[in-house]
Amino acid sequence: MQSAPQTQTVDQEIPVIDIGPFIRNEAGAAAVVAAIETAARDTGFFLVTGHGVSPEKTMKLYNLARAYFDLSENYKRSHGRGTGVLGGVAFSPMADEALAATKGIKTPGDYKESLNFGLRLPGDVWPGQPEGIEAAFHDYFAEMETLARHLRRIFCQAIGLDANYFEPAFENHLSALRVINYPEQEEDPLPGQLRAGVHTDYGFMTILRSEASSGGLQVQSRDGRWLDAPSIDGAYVINIADAFMRWSNDEWVSTPHRVANPPREKKVSSRRQSIPFFVNPSKDTLIKCLEPFCADGKQAKYEPISYGDYIDLKTKQAFGR
Ligand SMILES: O=C(O)CCC(=O)C(=O)O
Ligand SMILES: [Fe+2]
Image 1 (cartoon, rainbow, N blue to C red):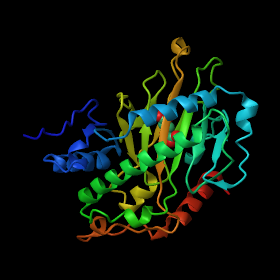
Image 2: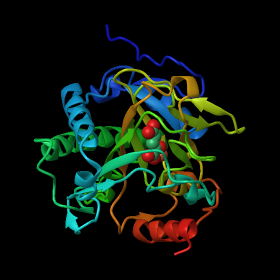
Image 3: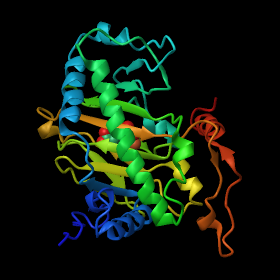
Image 4: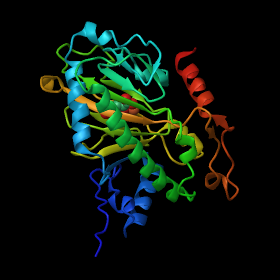
């Protein structure tokens, strides 16, 4: 007997879905696909377990990144200037980025710092310390590529596309791996300053390794309420991002989210580290209404556009440049 998939619902709006049966091609795979389709249409957010990602590689990256964040500000900033090395690393210091600006909302910079890497994205030469950090990023990146491939196959089945429909778009993908440090807030945040301001993610989808801590990820429901994303050991938070929403003719949703400040009484021991993997297609991928979403008399809402042009457009809208 094969066990039925565990589709428990912690918060009805952000379900937890065990994708193991789909990966192993067992009975229950169809129920996984159905649960993900419902979540993708409803809130665009869900958690997955049974994903097969190595906990050792995850912890290795987590611990080495933590050690990096504990090094001096001068040392870290020496990896932030961008020498344009493809596959290099880029440090983004505290309050450097204000995500809400992408939604036209003016706020102080986000209360976080981050370390960023993409196989085909420019950065600086890798630091010598802590030892092994470059390999840890590469190893975890490969784990994320595998999970992203499983999820794309689930999406294809949910939409009614051939299992490998999306694969050519991801042969030279522009995905980015980021480790974010949200420190304890020894100084009060400025008015309007959050750990991460409200935003949607730009690309195809995001695979987030979250951490339970006060001051965590919140997702906006369709009717404007802020839902706390459940934080479950070993589970990943998945969300549909903007380019995928457009590709689906807005039927699958990219949902605004943010990272709240810890409550004042808990500001000590509220340090949090998250690891998002932003899954992005290649630059020349054509984002054109997927056939099943514009069948049966449904009209495509958007002109076809390459992913590269789409990102340029979004950046211009957000920053006026
Ligand atoms: O840290 C988190 O939980 C989410 C971060 C996030 O949404 C982002 O960086 O796009
Ligand atoms: Fe995000």
